[in-house]
Length: 70
Image 1 (tube, rainbow, N blue to C red):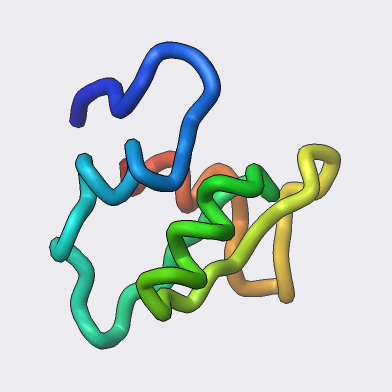
Image 2: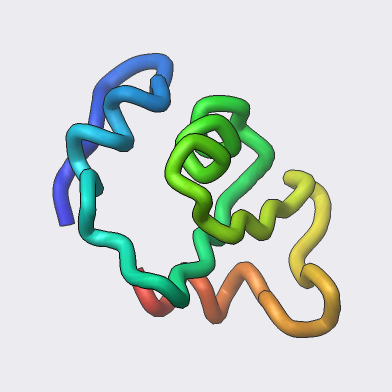
């Protein structure tokens, strides 16, 4: 793992770092930051997002589980 950008994250920064490393069955799990949503939409990636006060989404995605995978 490495830093994508110091400062405000932009969709092009995510594209530069992740690029074409996504497969057909990718699920991107993140907070509701607009640039991440934009990246997911532009790359046709399924995006599951959390509100900062939530810890579980759809009883499937849990923040601690996702963080432990990173």
